[in-house]
Each structure stands twice: as structure tokens, then as C-alpha cells.
Length: 404
Image (tube, rainbow, N blue to C red):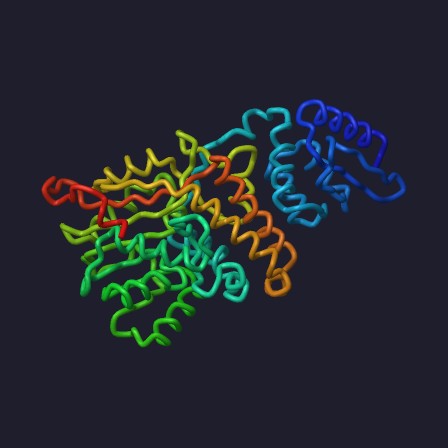
């Protein structure tokens, strides 16, 4: 490390110690090797492997720190939860850079081709990659913990049942599941509730897996899986519609149209459920300190999170009335923590499925999500809705039907 850069690093380290006292040690090798502590009681060590890491470290945001890690410019040692907490501490100590570390509102261009490409990037990694940390059910969305001590597998089935009870699914009804993933919800709806189901996904891997599950269960007469954009579904109406962990891909400027599409596919007396991650910034800003930029670049291209107020407004604009709104932020904190723990515990199975960069992306992403849900950076809402303009007499008096 050159003398000028070394002076800059030492000055930065002194500022971090004074402002944030982050329990991390920076270590670098070479002729001018050395180390510097950024706080007391060090719990995390960052080993600088490439000089290109220094500009990313001395002006830290979650995007630059994440970039240094996933690109292999640094290695990090320590408990994963501490690593994430340290990253937030460093990002919080950074000097303001024209507001770039704040919660900006990102709006991406959305086309059907672009959205399909983004979905394939995220989901078509490898089914063998997802299975060890998602579990046998292959459910990639917030679980539902009735007590808080359930295992992940049980909590995922509880989530699906919670949704199907909320929409009051009845035998023989037609159900459309938008963004059906690996098929768990439509299988449950057909097997346990007697529904006739259509599931649509843009992921080839999910389509192949879900189709195989339907065939293995002998449910071809009641469940159809399609490789199809929800905007191309033309055989409505459906009695019930579910959308679980999908609308994050829609885009802020397209939400009213998305909800309008759901409305056009519903029967006049139908019910729909939208389950998705939301921003906790009232102006639809993404995660703070560059966290949103990291996710946009490495994890969810073109992903955009609305505040729940935006969800409700655009839902009404699309012709749907919100009947019930439930915040499951605590549930997603536990879900992502269990995913992160499973990811670490099954590293020997998972790591060979992807290259080192993608392994690192998902490792830090899952742990970072658990931190974000814990600290009110993001939330998760289930919104039950019906076509707007219906008689008040058609609405139940209470929520008792949701909770057996």
C-alpha cells in the first residue's frame, strides 16, 4: 500500500473509531502489509486481497462493501450476523455523498422481455442450489409462524394454508397463482382444498420442477403449470387469485396496471391475495446506505419495493378494495434467518452448484435480509382484496374464518 493511500486509510480508520467504533480489523499483505482496528473488541476481520478494494472500503456503503466481498477483493472472517452488523456500522459512518446513501426511489424500465430476463437471472440458478436451504417444499417466500418455534418446513405449509383460508378457497373453484414458484401452493390448493388451479411462472427451472411435482402427485386433471407472463393469461375469470412474492418485480410505475390485470381476471365476487415485500420508506425509497443498489445490481435486477401506502393506493386505482392487511415483518425476519443458517450449514452441497461470486452474493444477501427485516428497513404485507364497488353486505363481520 502506497504511503499516500496508507495515510488516507489511517485517517479514515481514526474517523471511524471516533464516530462508530466498529468492531472490525482490516488486514493487508505484501511488502507494506499491516492491520488497523476500527473499534474495540474486534469480532470481524477483513482481509484485503486486492488494492482495488481500498476505494470501496474507505468510502463505504453497503453497495461498495458488498461489491468488494462478492468480487473477491476481500475475504471476511467472523460470525455472519456480526459481519452484516459491521457492514451497516461502516456504512453508517460514511460521510454523506450528495444523498446517495439515503433511501432513493429507484424506477427501472419494465418490458415483458426485460422482466422475464430478470426473473431467469434470479430463479434459474439451479434447483440443486435452492433445495438445501429452502427445504423439501421448495417454498421461496415468507413463512408463517403461529407460535414462533416451528421449523421452517412446518411454517411454510402454515403460510400456504393461511393464505388459502384467507381467500376462502372452496372445492371446485378456479385458482390462479401468479408467480407460482416451484408449485407448492397450487399443489396444496388442489390436494387439501379441492380447487382447480393454474400456476404461471417465467422461470424455466421452476416450470420444470412444478410440472414434475404435479405429475408425481397425479394432479394433471386439477393443476396446470404454465411458462407464461401473467399479462398473457386469457382464460379468466378465476374465483380466486394469489400472488406470493411476485409483485416486487412489477415496478412502481406499473402497480396500478398490475392490480387492474388481477381485477380483470377475477369473477365479480372473487377474492385475491397479494403477498409481497414492501419498503418502509413512505416515499417508496429503497433500502438505505446503498443496500438497495447492491440488491439491484447483484440479486434482483429491476426489482422495486413500494411502501404499503402505495400498494393500497394503486390497488384501489386498479379496481380492487383492500379487505384485510397483515404485516408479517417478524415472520420474514425469522424466515430469512433460517434460510441463512441453512445456507451456511449446507455449504458443502450448495457451493459446487454455482461459481464463487454467486455463492458470495447469496450468502451476504440472505444474512443481510434477516438484518433488514429485523431493523425495519423492509417489511412484508399480505393484502386481501376484492373487486371494488361491491355491497358492504358481502364482507364478513370478523376475521374469525382466517384463524382456525
